[in-house]
Length: 270
Image 1 (spheres, rainbow, N blue to C red):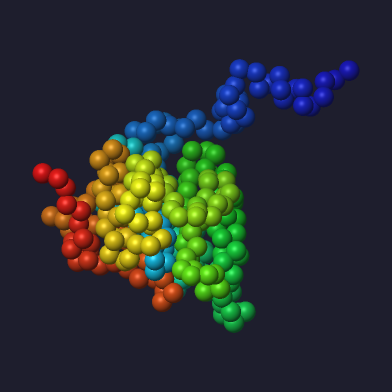
Image 2 (cartoon, helix red, strand yellow):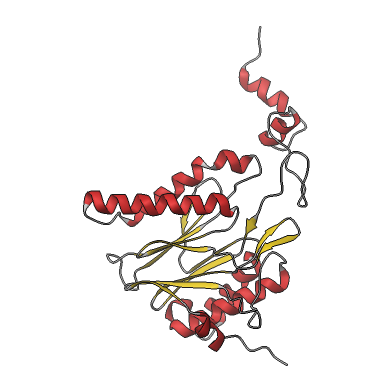
């Protein structure tokens, strides 16, 4: 009498930590290459690190400028904070090739809906649209290429003041709404610590910060991440390389100029 399929699978899984490892052992899934490259797949470009938090005027979204491939710095002026429409931003951590394509699809989808339905897409529909793109991309992520872990920020006029909405995702497309802040990417643990401390023990909660205070905090958080993570680019005033910082407010998306960031650069103790 043949064994049930569940027992057959369970037997085959013995000695393996998870199903992808079993597939790799059977030659059905490519083995992830080392960070510096391998014979089975080319070393992919990665873009990290990003953060977002709610402040008094809406939502601040920021990202460093470094893109890496293994232990090589590919580019030091990558834009990881992308405008999707007049009141929405997508920040990317992971594969920029896949993430930028997702951003392009989202932008066209929102624009098509607005022109055909003569109204804006709801916030919940926008959030689900990005979730679907991540689910569709999961096959590539399982192969060790093309993984994207984004942050999505928007301003909902129907939501009580301040109206900012902030969401983060996992690689499979599960969406989570952040109450105050969100970080992803290789430098996220350090930044999350900074934001938690400021929000809990600082002079004021994040939601009460004005524009300049919020920008200053974002710069300090990214600078802290760069100290502990080689894949995160720091602040380089001499080379005129600053993070990308954008604000989602009731008036729309506002980009913070390099001159403003120069004025608010954090001062280190001597």
